[in-house]
Length: 200
Image (cartoon, rainbow, N blue to C red; front, side, top):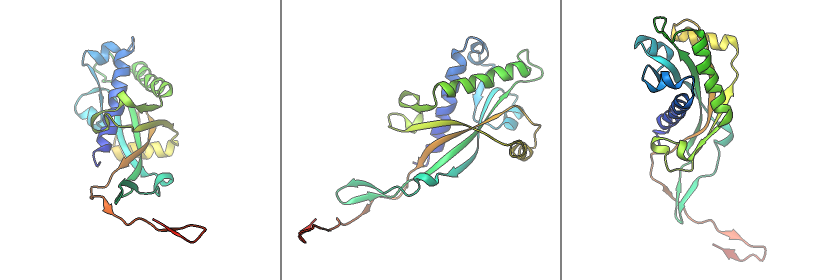
C-alpha cells in the first residue's frame, strides 16, 4: 500500500503522544492542548507557533537486506510482486516558545528524555500500537536510535535554514510499499524426482 509511510508516521506520533500524556510531568502540557506531537518539520512548527514535539520524516532509504525476498503467492496460479522495503528516518525535536511559561531547555530535555525512554522500553510497535491502514495487520515496526555525526546533523539544519536545535534521529524498519499492480499469473514448475518421474 502506498499509504504505508503516512500510517507509519501516524503510528509513531500517536504512540509518543500517548506516552507524553501518561507522564506525570508532561501530561499537563500535552493533554490541555498547549503542546502537540506534530509531523511538521521544526521550521513549520515555528511558523505556525506550535509547541511540543516535531516527529519529522526527513529521509528514507531502501532496505537492501530484504529487497530480494521471493514473491508472495496469492493463490495456486497467481503471484504478487515483491514490495519495496524502506527504512524511515525521523528527527525528534522538542520545541518550546520563548514567550511561553513552559519555555526553556529544561522542558525540551524532559520531552526528549521521554522519547528516549519510550522507545527504549518499547522498541517494537505492533498490534494495538498500529494506526490507520496498518491497524489489524501483522506488521511490526522496529524503532532504533540512530547515531548522527555532528556534520551530518549540521547539514540537516542548514537545509532547514534554521538554527541548530537539540534533536535525535530514529530509524524505523521495515516499511513495505506494496505494488499497485494486480497479481501476475504463473505456471507451476515441474520438478524431476531422482527416479526421473515428473511431479507437478
